[in-house]
Image (cartoon, rainbow, N blue to C red; front, side):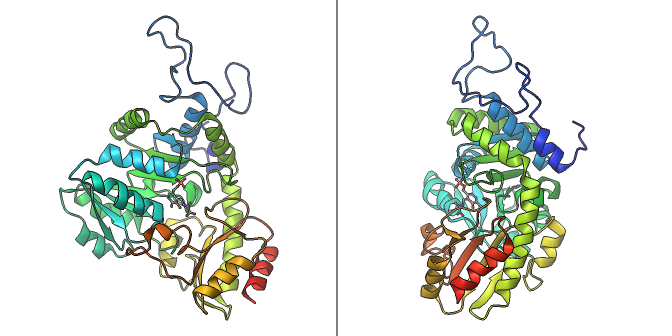
Length: 382
Ligand code: P1T
């Protein structure tokens, strides 16, 4: 496959040549913990123990790297395992990071309740405002700026290139959690980021049947440090989970197009609805990040957040009344999901500055027929 191959060609072929032993077109699930050695120290085919490396996981890692335009990828047992390994790789007691004041609650909890205990300091900043980023970064002292865009659950759009300029001038790395956009809609490394993080549980896997995470970099030294920590800590993706994510990646481009088509229509429907006080979707011209999203993303994605005019109880009632939109945490699968961030995905940040409004509902708009999705919401809001 040529280096200039298009996104879907890479998704279907990168790291996935036919199996050399059998010609199998799909990478086999190498369900093995260990590999026979040809005498002590004589490693056959590069594999010795599956925590260190496994052929199915290696296929996924190569494919993720190819899709993000990086040189190396690393696959983990969950998005949070990827984040934790990354933090242990780049930070140590005394390190300072700038983190978003609007992000997945679990990411914030990892900083506030786990890493802070080990002496890692994190300053929260409103990353959509570059002046705030500039004020939060300590030149020569800050290890990294952690970006999530679009954010979970408010769908704020952060200027990756703008943050990279400020962070790099201060000697800090830029990390981008690209879970909501997926590599199809947004390419953080090309915009100046140093490290891309994914919860592959979401759009990369795409079918709500696996928990996984990934890191991608385009720097040999950083890659070597991550490889060491991935093996030393051990939170790796299993062969079966790697296979599921790889299968999902093959259709990522067509799924993201359909997610975006459907979400655009759902957002337009909600935006004009009398029971909805605010609709948050980067593809609405009224969204403060609309112009930036147009520049930075291929399309606007499948996540839509809205506020119910009558308040929290009315929001909870809507969550209870949808039938096609299944009430559940997570996102990015082919089926539509609805959730109440205040009581579900972001319950762990109640009482912090990340606490979200109680009238907020988050939709992961799936790839069903959009007329059915809109009818379901119309009924639930009635
Ligand atoms: O759940 P896990 O695979 O460990 O990924 C954590 C994670 C990281 N980053 C972002 C932006 C995320 O949205 C998540 C997980 N989020 C949910 C489970 C959710 O419903 O928002």
